[in-house]
Length: 311
Image 1: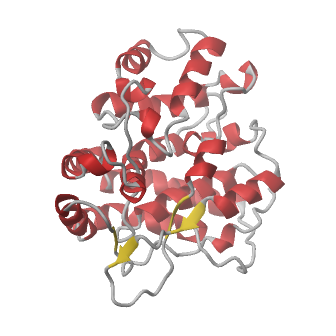
Image 2: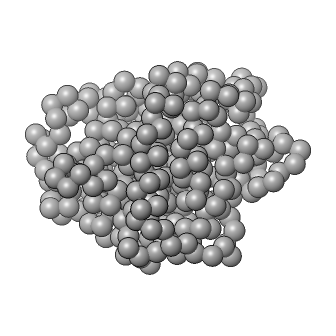
């Protein structure tokens, strides 16, 4: 197993509970919701196990940090911990939060998009299906799909992976107002360009992959993780507007074309075909989450964890 250069640069940054960030220039209704959201102890408790499991892999803005070598046993242990955390962070907690988020910040997510608010929505939305995706296993080998898929990706070379890890996060915009009087850490947000270019939320599955690499049980499991969640909780602004999830539509179409219409189970395929949230028929925007519960750190830490598992 190779090392991921710069994996340790991503240590503990967005995990600090003191960095409560509320975007400026938004409606009072949305601001009030996000303030309450930042103080939600249920979300903090729900994500604590995931934060603990991924803290060694979490993003940092410290570019001089030493690179880390993660052993296969350490990565396996972290993946196991993430996957065992589902009971403490159930979908029944996340779904109502998404509905409340959209109701309070409809303008910021659609008619007058605010990119900071949009990033917040995306990270909260992706938390459940992404966790399910990285916890899926190959039907034949019983290995985690993060190692099976990434090894087949054109982005799996150590040089490209190092670039991904270094570019997975960006400092939070100065337009975001800092509510805490003392900031012990620098907060970061997902780098939308990196997430989109490498389809990170889909474990680097790409529409142009060969049938041998694309038409696998892992691809089915990853897409099912998202489509099943979306069928019950549609991505309100429409996937075409998402900065982190927009690659799903092209990936789904490629799977249908390359692997055949029967590749996905009937229920999943039907949900994908009928849901505007899956096929991107609805237009507008939404995406990211507040630093207070560390969900942005959870997601990006899980991305680094997923990349580490592929080496």
